[in-house]
Image (cartoon, rainbow, N blue to C red):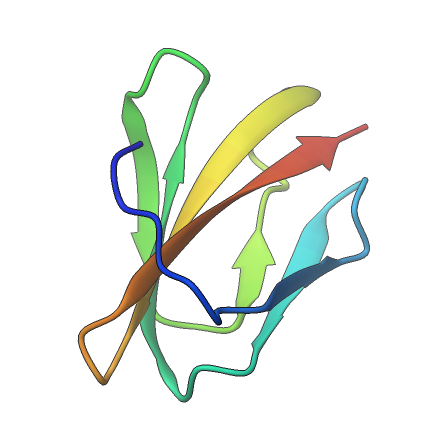
Length: 80
C-alpha cells in the first residue's frame, strides 16, 4: 500500500476482534473505509466508523481509511 502520511494516528479497537472494530483518528472525520484481504482484493466498502467483519473468516485484513479532508491511511486488523 503506497501512501505514507506523517502525523496520522489511527486506532483500531478491539484488535484482534471477533466481529466489529471501531476506527478512531486524529485526522478528522472519516469519509469511508475499504477492507482488503492479504492479496489486495477489495472485500467491502462502508461509511461507518464501526467496521463489520462478521461475514469474513478468521485472518488478517487491511483497512484503507479515507478522510473527508482527502487524506488516507492504512492499517491491519485481525479477526479471530
